[in-house]
Image (cartoon, helix red, strand yellow):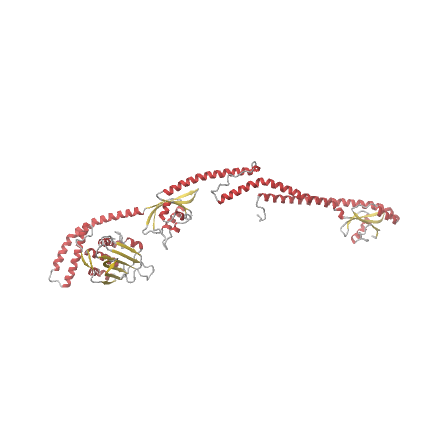
Amino acid sequence: MMRWAPKTIMGQLIAGTLLVQLLVFGVFLSFSVRDQFRESRERDRIRLQRQSSIIAKSLAQPMKLHDDDMIDDVMHELPIAASLKGARVTDVTGKVLRNTSEELPMQLSDREQKLLPKLLSGRKYLRVLSDEGNEEGAQPIISDGLVRGILWVTQDSALTMNTPKRVLQSLLIYFPFALLGNVLLVWALSATLAQPLRQLRRATLQLRCDPNNLSAFPLTVPVVAAQNEAGALLDSFNGMVSEIARQRRGTQETLNLLDAMLRTAPIGFAFYDRDYRYIRINDRLAKMHGVPLEQHLGRRLRDLVPPTEGDVNSLALESERVVEQVFSTGEAVAEHELSGELAGDIHPRIWLASYFPVFIGEEVRWVGVIVSEVTERRHAEEAMRRSEKLAIAGRLASSIAHEINTPLEAVTNALYLLRGNPSLDIQAQDWVALAQTEVERVGEITQQTLRFHRHSSTATDVEVTEMLRSVLLLHNAKLRSANVQAELRLEDPALLFGYAGELRQLFANLVGNAIDSMPQGGRLFVRARTMRRNDRKGVRITVADEGMGMSNAVRRRIFEPFFTTKDASGTGLGLWVSAEILEKHHGALLVRSRQAKYRGDASGTVFSLFFPWDGVPRGPRIVHSSAEVLADHLV
């Protein structure tokens, strides 16, 4: 549509009326005025011919007699019509004898000279256009059958066009009044249509800006439009809006009921659009995410819980994958397990999510999800399984310990007798004494296993440095085979009051794990020194390695029973038992570990234990830290 075209109905009707009127007037003017001009010219031609014939007859006798006075009388006294400009009389040679008008030339033009032969031979009236543009009639003057002369009568073209001009002037005066009358009529008629439509337009624009604002309805039907189509349109629109408002109230009541159900539901509800964005969510699921409800709407889960770099199985991406599956297949997915960590979580959480499609026609418009958190239930189930494993392990360990105890007593007696044999040299007696000590420790362990708790008969003063040397001596073969170099820094004396057998088992577990973490070789650092910690005197023992290190997830679970990273070669009980021994001695433990991200980076693990001399009766304080292994390995 052209830019200059009117935008309103009234403007279009008025513009259309003007255009049609101009077109009709132009067509009428072209035909009517043209006919008027043609008829006027035709009448003037006939009149000119008749006048020329009358004057020529009057001049016939004077021209025959060559009576100049009579010719002058005829030329002056003969009434000449007002439409004639003048007349001339020439002889047969074209010489002008008489001329009634000074405006006419005194001699014939070339065009008129060329007509003389025709006039003389044909002796008939001829019409010619003068050089000035006036019509001119040429009539031979005949007397007694001879051409005595030629009469040239010139018509005044300005006067002959007066009648058509007056007609055209009348039409031009009439046209503006007729056009104005038509425009007023159109304006009056269009007002009955335009006013209701303008009212309807304003109301619909208000409704489009705010769909909930129905204050402009019902629309008022003007009196002039009450009986026509515009009034019927307003009535129909009022009825339609009233029905929409009624349906909206019903829909809003349903939505309010649904929102109340969603808010009070004990499980999480949400709906996703095609771009995985939340379009509705209840408070329960928002609290699970740890993000306010209003921040969910229009956003995706990945915006709220960004996946870690390279983590393709993250919580957000896994959820979006299932949503895409439901959109693609149109089939529900029931009790899909999701696990991950949200903002502020220390331990992983577990959810069961059921996804279902919401159809509009045959198209999946949205995907709904029902989420329930089962973290505590899974932990309870896992704790129950661990308890069952521990009970089974305890019964099995008690049975094995009972069977071992009898031959162990025999070995103990044999070692006692062997130690008293005078044939052994001093070094051999030392080896036998060490073996006897270890067998006694095994005996204590079997006795403790029978009671399923670690409880030595009595606590004694323990020389920590000597105990650490003996533990490394027992692991000497393992150190050599693993190409591990042990570096000791032990302070003498470092006395500790505790249960010797259990402490030896604790140190052996830490040293053994450190060696296992360095399959390619490395260095093992063992430190022991007396110190004060929080104004409490005690002994600090540090076991550090240059092994593979542990991830955060592994470090959080190392003290769980039966958790192991050694596959079939590990039982998962070593550090669990060590934690119980540490608790029994009211000690504290700090664990630091680092895994190398790039080749050449440092990695390793540090276990730093503190045993107080006074033994405050409280459980172990196990501190997890992701700090890097220090260069001096907590010297």
